[in-house]
Image (cartoon, rainbow, N blue to C red; front, side, top):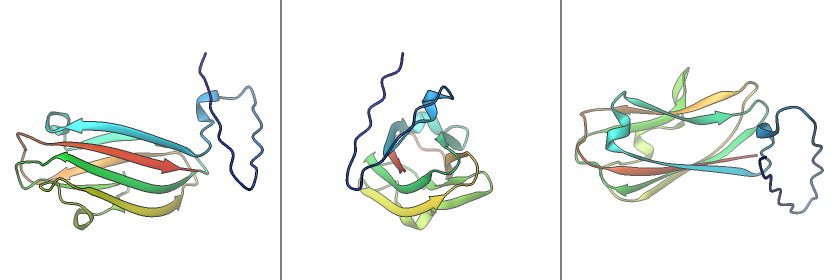
Length: 133
């Protein structure tokens, strides 16, 4: 059985639970995943889904270990690779935290993907966090 934690702030939010799919209940949710240079061999990483009618509020990219090559990253969906974060919004060769506020509402469930370009790295690590409502 899965534990569900719901935190309420002002104004109060009423959450109705149904027997539908419990994994789709994600009020004020944030998801974080970490990747290294070895994970990006295919040129992209599917981060996770933003469910229908959810708002993708913010995406944060933390370069914890700089990449050693001229690799670039953009974050988006299959039909728009830089919808969330373009290549000029981050620098994978510099350890730093990069974030964008996007407030994107999706009318259907969308997979958030990190797309990589440039030469293949031999070092580097990132942590990405997405915040949805």
